[in-house]
Image 1 (cartoon, one colour):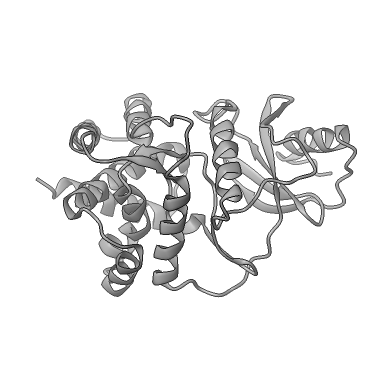
Image 2 (cartoon, rainbow, N blue to C red):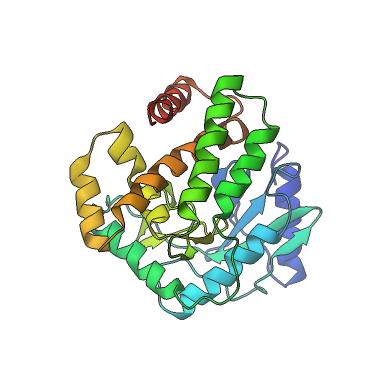
Length: 286
């Protein structure tokens, strides 16, 4: 057991496992951020909310993620399944929300953009009959609240972001919608020995499918100019509403910018540069 900032969440995870007759035999750190991801046995991985004062400090987000994971797994979608040895949860112990997943083995194979488009399409198809109601355009509404509370921007930038988010809500509100991943950026794709998987479903909401596509292509299209990646992914996904996709690109940039001070309170030079590029790009859109 560690004596650093991880000691308390790891103690909470350990006690939950022990209460179900399981003893951890390792503490392999896979992610250390607002959410801790740690491998505890050969097959069990825990996700634990560490930021107990942040916007995700309740079990609501994990409840949503668990319901989606169960639905998607039952339909054979390319996602990581919950671990069968524990109740689905979410579990809350010592104040830490947590859930438990089956360990999958990463590979170093870089996924082709067409494969990414097909994986997203399969997940969207599997979600088409997901019945629990999800918040409509939830991440945009939430981002307005986050933006209103942050002191991390100059007034003119904050006003611009508020305008872009509000306009996006109005423009996207009348489009066809369905359950979405919500945060389908490339970092939530995992290439594994069982194939390419889409992970981290806690931000799911209802909206136009173009939102998830925009989330996957934003960096390639706007920051990197990798148009071959963009075209291949979109072609593999299938028909899209061009106007909706353009608005989702704007909304995605505004959402990510609004969250930056929360996600990266002490950004390095690279993150500061990317943040400024997003702000400049948004400011240049009429």
